[in-house]
Each structure stands twice: as C-alpha cells, then as structure tokens.
Image (cartoon, rainbow, N blue to C red; front, side, top):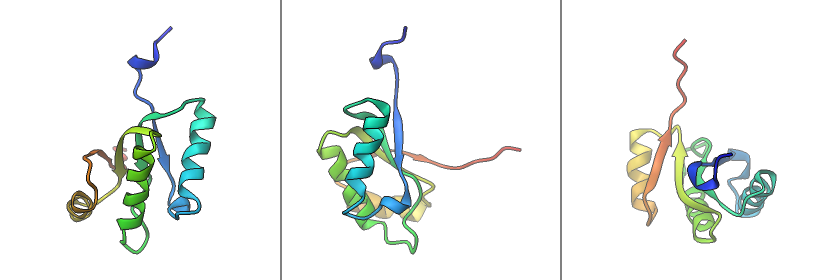
Length: 103
C-alpha cells in the first residue's frame, strides 16, 4: 500500500460554513469523514460572496494554528483577492485552485 507521507490530502470549507459558528465544526467533520487528525492542505472553496474575504481567511488561519491543516490555500480567487489575502494572513497560501473546464 501507499504510506500516508506519500499522499497530499486536501479538503475544502464551503461558503455556507464561513461563519465563526460553523467553520471549525465543518473542518472537524471533514477530518472525521476522512479519518484523519489533519489534512495537508485546507482550502476555502470559493471567495466569500460580496467580496469581504477577511473573516474566512482568519478562520482558515485559525484552523491551521489548531493543527487541522499543515498548509492553507484558497480556490477561485482573483489576482486582487490574492494580494488582499497576502496582507490579511500571516502565513503563506500554498495554492489558489482555479476552476477550469478545457472542453
């Protein structure tokens, strides 16, 4: 079989869970579903509707600080959002996973 250290496991938090009451329970449920203590990458699934990305990024960073993720990133952020995210977070975002449909 494949050992855990040969895998890069990623999960996402959906926009519906971008509140202080729902964010960490959502991450904890994902970890239970995956039967893991942490993931390699935790992503925000989409930018926050309305464009205010500060709270979701702070919650994402908190999840990393709690040990739920080794690294953090985002999905579908514009270049301007990436610049703003860099100013908000004290840690690097390892990826911006962008939706792409070649066909």
